[in-house]
Image (cartoon, rainbow, N blue to C red):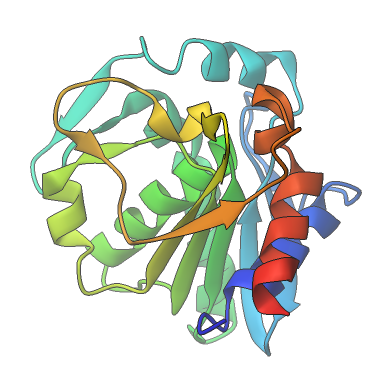
Length: 210
């Protein structure tokens, strides 16, 4: 496998499931976990845990978008969720002298990681790399163009019944993914939920790396 970040960041996210968040926003709709991956600080946007987050996830196709003057339309729910988290990450990196760092996330957290990368690029402190595992679409071609020179990758599981449906929403015209796509083959027996969940994603990434 040619991607040096795909497996290490995947494992970092899996580890976050049992960790206490390094930062949680006041509305408890965004958790960030901090670790060290490949000698770099890594900020992982966590999985859906609270009822507030489930509400955001459930309404993902219907939440209004925000037409950012530089990035174009972006998912407003995720954009609002990460605002204070990005402030906390900036404060932490500033205290460390702005080292190279990594971002990652799964599902809702994957969408947050991509928007987080864009926010950090806007202030000219982008991460070394971002990996988004099974993300929904969070922007349009304008966001993709803004991030075109950045090291961003995202995954999409697939089996005989199709792809992870989360990666296909929202079904808004012109909305798309950002970065390099990696398809992950999962067992044909995996259903809609199983294709999206961590056991299948991690197993497929490990198989790709072997």
